[in-house]
Length: 347
Image (cartoon, rainbow, N blue to C red; front, side):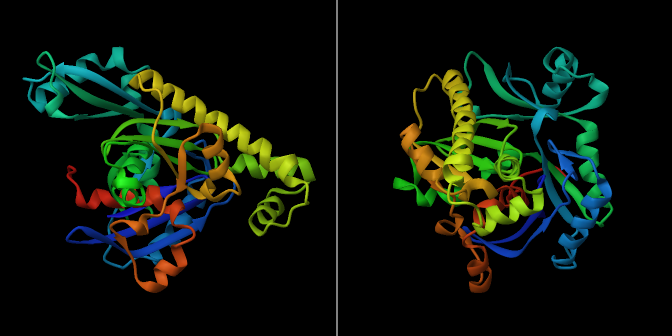
């Protein structure tokens, strides 16, 4: 399956092959979206998205028919519940359907539900922890319909936080001692969404999202210097801003983003009863915002770095690696989705 990350700024795709323990990038693509096509992770302009997906499809081998996409934001709910460990999966499904109304704050005819058993070695008092996920069905269907329009079949609709956490196997090699016995926060800084996946001993144990991202930086440039969106985005990318922009725009944006990160970390500390984490790995298009790594490192006193999956079991031909090396962090969600090709999932 090709992993397709439908963001609010662009659509990114990664196709992976696997040989023994390593993965190889077969194809990749990133197609910009017209502003307003995807807002708050909801598809607002299906035609514009389909046009972008058509260009993605052209970049893929002709035999690729299946895709993995993801949902996130306010349309998604995750809960960890306890269930009787002696129940079969079918019995758990029946019980969840009976109790879903009390667990999910949406009308049941408007949502799709799935669940997964967590670590079976942690059975306590004959109960097992079960991850319950629910999403508005129309949010899922809109992605499926968009893929259908370009002759791609959505075999998997994942959750962005867990797709991000899955890429930990690519970046753990850039951590001291390969991340063993450590707690790592993987944070994807998208255009309008901040997604966090907390990794303990290689497992994703906590995911959260916040409505903020690199687009807020562009908006600040627009309002400060009276530029259009396109001109502000171009000035940001090319570094064509006034000398005072660091104090006037960059520093306030960094502090705003930092507060969002602190808030999510505090939620994790409360749930996990931990007092600190070991590492932060930044992903997404906003990961390379000037000075962000150092700002987080100094303010939170946590070792922080930008994701570099090429340090691990991710490989590519020399031309592709040279092209992607500086921007690979923004493809991490797409990589996490593409990895579903090599794990267990129902067809």
